Each structure stands twice: as structure tokens, then as C-alpha cells.
Image (tube, rainbow, N blue to C red; front, top):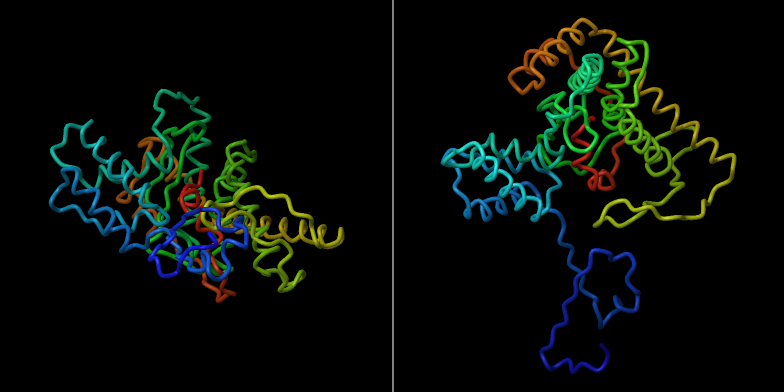
Length: 342
């Protein structure tokens, strides 16, 4: 790059999604010294992108683009293009003349949860476990403050291994997450395991992904966000991976002693245990509602907003507590997965 005549009018542009591994010599003054971040679009940006792609398909005149944009936080331009294409395919399969909001909702579920696998037949006992598991997620999420609204609960298997799912969708883009909200998210993730423990006095392997995600949140609270009194306002592990491509496994030597490592493990376990107790206490308090709603889910297989609304009205939101606010950027890459309590 050296030797360019500054008066020649030559501009050199480059793009990367791994800025953290670039040679510093490339970024020094006189070279690539101007950096422009092209981040995921915000709600208005998503609406504008959707309109561009919707111009290529036949959509219903009353279609609310803003509602679709609100349903898709974290989606990139390519994700939105895929969503429009999937919605058009859904409309074509049903023989519709135009693509409606319901088509977009079904397309969204296909993208984030996978295809329905109605051919995957579960035994009656397994269906009952899945129904209580998913309603455990839903009731805890609807009861605790700081959780995203529950849009749909289903026990129809989807994707490769999903036997059911609870779909949550935020009402707005979020950039900060409080400590109490993180605890509520963990409790909602553990609601399925808590329901199994409460109703069947036994647990299944269906909560493995929930446990992994709850543990990840708890560990971040301990080692990155300084949210435990015992370990103080200290960062023990820096963020791994790139903020553009998501979390990647990167080996780093630990910069703390064995005693601190043991304290970290204990603090993570304490947070997860606390979230589990919150979930189980919530379900025990509303056990009758859990049983009736699980039976309704078994009969219908899917509960949408109309069926969930009266269930939510019978719940009382838990108390709110002002807590420390933290940067939620690190959780943004997992935004799609966070909507599903499988």
C-alpha cells in the first residue's frame, strides 16, 4: 500500500468480519485508518430492508411491516431476505393470492425453530412430559418481570431434535440488560426442568440445552459483568470471539488462581440454583394453572396469542427490583436462540 500518490484520487476499500485478527500495521494512520461498522439493522432499518424485498413478492395491502420488523431483532439483511422468500413459499403452498402476516409468522418459526416434524411420533407419556416442560417455560416467563412476551407454545416436534418450543419475541430492540432481567431469563430457561421436577418428581434429558444456556448466562454474570458480591467488580475472563461473528471457542490461559476458579464455579452454581428455585416456586404457586394449561396444550398441540392471553391474565407479575445495568451486546449474537426455550 505504500507508494500511492496522494493526489491520484485513489481510494482503497476493504471489508472483513474479523477485525480483531487484522495486523495492526494495516490500521495505522495513512493506511486503513477510517473504519466504518456495518452493524445489524435496527427496527427502522429492518422495516426499510423488508420493504425492498417485499417489492418482489405479492403482499397483502393491510400487511404491517412494522410488526414484522419488531418480530425480527438481530436479523441481518440476508436473514430478512430469506424471511420474505420463506413467507412467499408458505403463501404459495396454501394457495394464497398474497402473502399475509400469518405467512410471515410461520416463516419466522421455520427459520428460528426448524421445520415441523409431524411424522416424529412421541409416546403419550413423552407428549405429557413435553407439554408440562413447555408450559413450565411459558408460565415462568409470563410471571417474572423483564422477560420477553410469550408468543406461542407448541409440542409439535421441529428441527433435528426439538420436541417442542416456547417462542418469545421482544417488543423492542434492547442494548442494556439488568441483573434482575438476566436472573428472570435464567429462571424462564429452567422453567421446563422445574415443571418436570414438580409434576413427575423426575427429570428428563429434554432440558440439556436449557441448562447450557442458563449456565452460560450465569458464568458471564460472574466472570464478565461483576454481578456477585463475593468476587467483586472484577473481570476474570475477557470476551471471546468476534462481536461480528458471534462467540467462538478460543483458548486463553486463565489469569487467576485455583482458589478463584473454585469460587467462580461456586458462584455460577449458586446463581443457577437460585434461578431454578425461583422457577419451581413460581410453578408450585400456580400448579393448578400449570396442570390445566398443559392439558389444553396436549389437546391443541399449539397455543397462540389468543389462547395464551387468558392464561397470562391469571398470573401475577413478580416484583421488580432495581439492579445493576450491564451492556447486553455480548448476548446479541445469541438473540435468535434466546427466543426459544426448548
